[in-house]
Image (tube, rainbow, N blue to C red; front, side, top):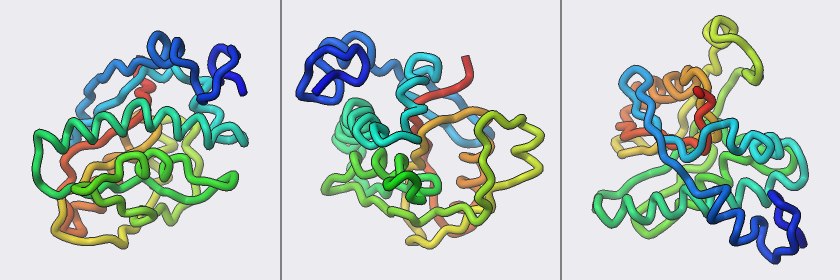
Length: 191
């Protein structure tokens, strides 16, 4: 097998050198309305890896990125915050044989963390990739939440561009009686 980044021989998805030097997370925070969004990378840093979600290798790549970023984050978070937390992924629909967002949320499962798979789904199948802010505003995702109420939630998505999707998701969750603590994304497209 070869490292998905440098192509050196590796039994892992990414070799230790790439994990340490190229994929070391650099967490940034952006506030969108009332929602704090924490991202582990700048989009340009891992763009080629993120675009792999539409390929057969995407499963391995997203699983490895989740293990490098989200898994350690939630482990550290739960050591300082004892309450029970739920994780809600943005639109965990299966595409290309798997859901890349479900891979991200699944990596966060632990004793005090519940994963609410497929509980927040978009009823509008519109694609936002490459679209303007005006287009995104004119074509909302129309999320439907079918999960527990009266819980504390962390939202998870792969990328934040304008933040509109996360704001729509937050609004639906709040209307459903859910407290959204913050959101996590792999990458922030704002450079």
